[in-house]
Length: 92
Length: 482
Image (cartoon, rainbow over all chains, first blue to last red; front, side):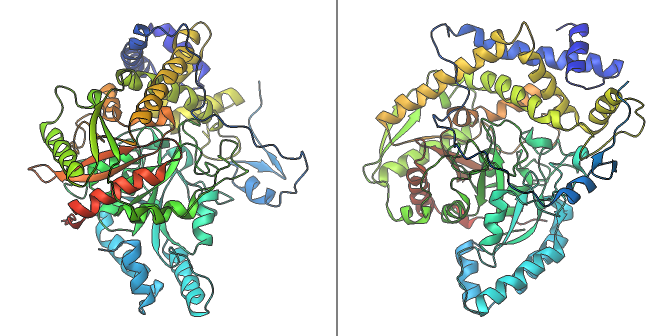
């Protein structure tokens, strides 16, 4: 994997990497991707993909509002809040 | 030995839960500095739960097998008001506002929670060396790892710093550390146990399970927390029996399969010898042992290391510094806050897996990697379905090695990933698996054997494991933590 691609992937993943870390991660990711390409030996052209191991029907429930009582505790866990709003730096 | 059953007898005979809990808290204070199994010790909360358990017993209210029993929880399990960190700096001071379903069930059963156990960060690891709270040491040899990611849970049970523990298993994180520390670890069928309140790593693979000193204890624990949960959309709508009732049957005429692909060249010869001896023991106990094939075994690890990171990068996107957890203080704009918070607080292994996941899901690579891995998953699952038509359970080594030295594999992620080679297939297929001790090396390190079964057939794997355990009696060996 090239360094530029690692940088792009890190940006998509919202992870900042120093120049040294970029080199280190490029090497590690390349090594692992090279290993997982072992799957290329498999012919999966007629194989349905499995997203979940168990065949199961989704549990359906009525779309009813259920009151939630613990808003205050949730808000207080936030790094910064103002009344019941999470406060963050400006977008731009 | 302080199993759940033995502790129950002591409580019925007059020992109080407060006394039992204090004994454990004192033992933790003495030994945890050597092992580092616990991240958070809940002294006051535990004693309060113990007092309530004693009152419940005294007032004649209905008791369960877990009433008054001191247990501990992997720190990936959400506990209301008690710090839950996932062994990450990003949640270092996080206090959840609710209990997960499994935690609540154990509290309702009257169990006493001693504390939260160390783990690899966000369950990503096989040695408990990826924790922001320091590595865990193996009670059998403190220069060795206990395995991971439920390394703290395994070490705590092995060193008797709790009667039993909960772990979670995504690619072997209950079974592999159980094998490396000489205890029992069970990964249930996917969907058997609610994931609501388990900090998510890979949602199609994660399962909570018991880590105990005996198979009977694992059956007792599972009985108390398995079952359908409407809060978990992947939870199976299946009856959840008392699994301990299935332990009465032995292995007579049961068909046990030994897959060729799990006994490869280059394996630790002491592990091969131990499994051969176990096979002979099963035959002596009346089982019919046969060789089988799981031909796609070699593709399980590459498949897993596409699927799991892909799901993880999505699950860990929530750690952005907005609503909870660590927030970087220097950010001027929102995007900087996301990038810096995550970069400053995630460990390297977590960042690596997020990046692998992001790459395999990204435009232009999705079909070649993620979709391909999902198809490989189908083939692996079909291998088990076919094999488990011929046999009732499958016996394998749990790990290709015994406990390895601290720092032995930390420089090469791939070397570490291959620790999971015998455990990840069960997660990909969704089937249940249990690891039990089956011997020791000449240097005194435990060897683990894995029993795999059909989906929702925990009763058969428990029956097989229990029969072997009672005959071989490896549980009588316990480490002396020096």
